[in-house]
Length: 393
Image (tube, rainbow, N blue to C red; front, side, top):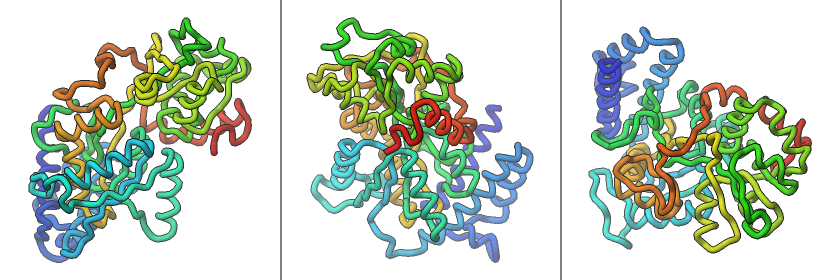
């Protein structure tokens, strides 16, 4: 297994070097993907020996490489990088400013604050909204994003199989656990998020302890599965407690809300007594002095690696790769903790102030590939329990 991983890393290093150099090697059809005959042979021979899904991924590598080489051959490529993300507006607006002032150039140097850097253009929406936008763009001619940064991994599994993602590996030596890195080499987590139990401290001074406590709160809320984090947590809670968990929640008077932000705002405004909310949102609200507190449930929550990927159709692939390198760097991860209150993916960066170490949080498991195939079933269940279209807008 270790030898296999080492060989895989070597292959990705070759690909990454070729992408950044913009070199076109070989002749004939192989030149179109910017890869030598020897490297092509190594990729296909190795991937052919792996499960069928990996063979599709190998073909995706070659498709992505051809598009990346074509893009890198255009010397007039824009300095604009387009990011599709589900992160909140308050976070992405700060990230835009950080990137424009401090973004490293392709050699790893930083421009001085205020100097002209790469412009980050952000298209923001819930995970389901971004997925629909991508589907619409593909149907009408091609995806417009250079980068995709959604809440959880399941959409990336499908995009990888479709050949829509470009190969990427974190900078050598970055202390990032392998659980946060796609073993096929197409995406890597840029933050870790999870859902917690939060409550209005004026209305529930005793607080809550576990997910089942939410069933005893008449004015409770849970975000709809259009949120990627909510979708993963809904799946995990259904696996843990059975299909009746959300039926009991609705019977007790709980409401479906369209987003985690709506759940947080409902708690702080007193509209809801308690809700499931993303941890970083609850941390932010509590730090601001709002009447909110929260807990990581005793039975566990899903620790969600929130992945970044470069698209195979990226107009600016080299700058997109530099963006990801920066986000995964020690300074980049410290910035993500600062502006987003997120858990970092690097082991050498401290978690947010007051946040418990990740390895002390009880966890619930989710199979990301299965989650991706169960999206419609989860949506159907949600509509049956809370009403058609509940919390979807």
